[in-house]
Image (tube, rainbow, N blue to C red):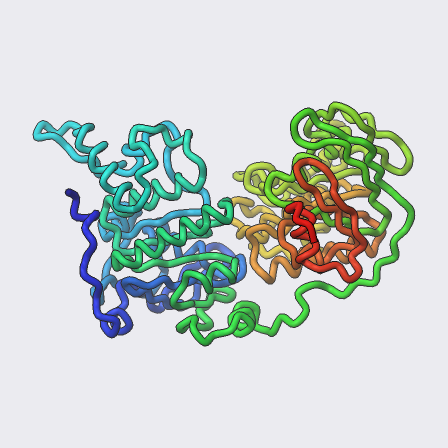
Length: 514
């Protein structure tokens, strides 16, 4: 049996408290025009979870890349078990037993589970060839030790769901006997049941004396699974300690440098006549008989559980998918949409939920991402005018308080919250009458959320109409003028947001009688 499957003796509690397994001290890192980290510190302890908390752009991703050997610090020290180490490359982190599990698992879909687990350190025969039978056997032992025996080592990774891919990533960490495990937003795409299963796995890793770094924007998860916290703000470490006895308000104040008393902006909406009208809209498989109106200057919230059909409905309204029947009218005129371009031209813009895959174009600079749907306005006689592109991008990104070194910065190097601002700026630049925001604050920090919410309030005050799809009840209740509740592809209720409470919405969405 492999040594990684045998439970090791627990270190005494006082030893775990006193001696960090992994520590960073005085770490700084700068990029052209940006100081990402300034003399930060972090300690991880065996058998404990430390939550790294901070707004997007606080320096968390840069720190993870330093811990995994992708970036080199400009100054500072790294120590494992009290001894200084250097991590000049990703392989060095691997050798020192550091493993990272990301929001989107960095594995290979066309390889088997066993190949992914042992990639780079596969067992060999005495002739130097890969010992396939032993690799499958060892992979099965690793998975069984984790309680993941339902995963077949011979299965191609692409056949697994996200939750099981995370298990394979953990299996890889176990196979190298990783002593330090980094989990970067691991629950972002998981269901509630899968999140609980992941938490059980984290408890297993703790029992194996792994030192775990857990990065999340979700406070309920942090308080559920973490023992310690470290808070970053603007590239600096501003607080650390034990979570027990530390309130969420204290941590939020550290994160943003101020108390956040009012999460949502105060609004005094002036709502006008109906602007967008959807009547008996249906899709063969996703939704049926959808009818509602969106009024001028209104934020209309759409709430529902997973599988309710909200995103599918919005994609149909945006002209991305074909419907089987029904009509969509804007300003009293029916939209004969043959494509998403027709819908944009009519005055409807859609900001998708998956900003990384559907929202931004990684590899292009910020200004080109913003100007992409508005090329007719930034070109003359078919030739793009660089100055016009910059002017357009600057106008909208400044309104959203985008944090970047310049508009020429690759959008892929921005934090999640700033990427979301670029996506919103991109579609606002088309000057729509209606903007659909699908999970506009998913996976972004509290400061960026406040910026998006504030901007939404400004837009409707200027007469724009907003449809906001959200799974976050506080966001639905805090920002919507009316709420549409969907269940299994149908609208089950449309409510004015006066005296509306979270319990009522959940009951409607789940079909539970009051």
